Image (cartoon, rainbow, N blue to C red; front, side, top):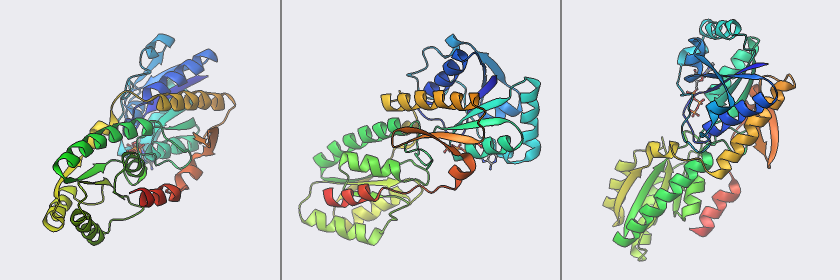
Length: 317
Ligand code: ATP
């Protein structure tokens, strides 16, 4: 079989480990693998390169993606996808492994409906793909966020400040919830919890009056202007307050062993499924078992925030 592999959407640490796993697993089956540059854009433009075993040497521990990634909104149009199908046919590539988030999955599903065998692998730091307990990159991003929050906590405590830290996650609160819990944040706000600003201000004022030296607030991106919020906290609570947006540092860095392991397992599994003639599914790990789910179903699954963890935050703060 001739298999293409691409990375698409936002990059995430561990994508390289997934590419390596796909290439090596396919080669060991006697298949041929073609790396597609820059996601669906490179697919439409026919930018393929046949990969040998050594082409994926020494990338296991590197962040980012050696294939490059891109966003091509026009891929929603069938006429644009037809160009991709033509490029694949021209190169006799019958199957495609697409590593990315839900947008990438939507592209893979559309190609499946056009007769290309496709498998999706969850590669995103956001952990927003409900068909897998964890996505490749989440563990590394969580490590990065925890490291940064720990450091901010040191300085907040020394100066008796309140620190507001905005973390990534798109519309999924996992990165905020997990990093906040792991660093002992007093307040965690996500799309799932909402932000009750009045209550936060009142609580912080009480904390300050009770003599607590610092307060850490972790908040998901896209919820509010954290710089403005810091000003309001300062005006109201008596704490000096600083806001920090962690931003793109969360997308980089050496993947953790957890992300490498997940990437290796999911890459190998995706190749096995193609060998069995399966298409239009995405792979994941649920309760530590490898699972495949039809992409259509996966795209309609809701991320359920962990009630247990949210309750713990309240108890431990
Ligand atoms: P991340 O979660 O990191 O942002 P993602 O895969 O969700 O990753 P998107 O930008 O949403 O990132 O999608 C990646 C690419 O997938 C898009 O640029 C586009 O080429 C393709 N895509 C997205 N939605 C669709 C769709 N409905 N139909 C076909 N292709 C799509």
